[in-house]
Length: 514
Ligand code: GAP
Figure (cartoon, rainbow, N blue to C red):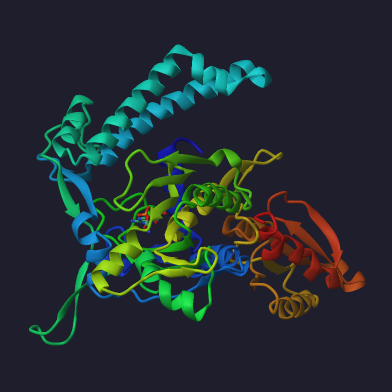
């Protein structure tokens, strides 16, 4: 695939063509940055959610899951700090009238410097082959060292300015770097201002009595306000976790890059309640555990990296992102945050209710500290989908488009294909379909030549095709074709269930996480 933009465009069009993601309300020309998950997308999303839920809840006897409401008492958001501090710095371009996140403009500038470093590394790797030592190269090559210092200095200054809320310096930085409107090239900027990201709404029928509410901007607060209910009814002992998946809403200044940044999205969050003072130990533990979960999907170790935060959110004493290499570069996929006792203490203060845990080992009560893991489901979807979409040159000189989704996540596990639509083959194929549908999500396809049907299933991401042919009539065997290798094996019909199960069963995949 040619360049990053082309590759990303291909991801978006493939997602539509193969029934993964549609623009929302498309018959009315769509709604900016809002998308619907289509028939295959809904399955892939559900499978990712299940992969997360099982790893977190089912495999940890001290983590339980809840499903809190999107609407919460409005004081929740005063206590959490979102009313006062859930802002993004925005800047408008006076000529184009377009609005941007000021910090993102600077980060995109830095990403361009990082791309230059990557280019130098790739060139050197090619030149030196097996002898190439990347660490040595990046720490000694003069141009790369200069780029790295430049990128670090810019990020440091941005972090410090945001920390001090020095928005004038953020603007000065944009101007010093000569950053232009990415769409028009204009450098005619307004001042940088803060913009609150919460969506407001009203509860109640009459205008006089209606209560002002917010759509939750994160699922985490539903966990904090239920902390004591869960601890008591579940007889939970510290350390313990509460997990949740659900929708969150943010009025993002710029929602772009497809499903990477949306105004309505889904989070998968887990708050781990711990003894004060043990946060460093659990921070390191969950960083490693979450990376392991990602790596278990086999999407390539080099596609992940940690980014430790310089600028910490108002609630955190340490924070890191797991970044993934999206088609547009490394970006945040998941956050691991050490939130101290900020949230529970705030809710104690605002609600006037004690939110403490009696620790029998210490023989005293305290407000627990919290270690949070927070991942965007839609972002994870984009990571999986974009990484899986590949164009392969075949030995015969042709190319194929293949969606190499991890088999455990693929919406459809098997396609059952009669070689031809006659001679009793469809009847056998339909019988196999009826037998296997109890175990796997499968499909039946008898239209077009079998080669075209294979290509269709490759592009849709189906890991296996089962072909019923004339030999099946003689010996009860079928061809089992593997999507990634295109290898075809003759197997007995009664072996099919086990062979497929070995590759798609969530149990086999999750064992790599433990
Ligand atoms: N409770 C902590 C919290 O919400 P966050 O870093 O703001 O932390 C966590 O969000 C994750 O949610 C991010 O790493 C990202 O994957 C996802 N996320 C955040 N904003 C998003 C958006 N506008 N669209 C899609 N995903 C988003």
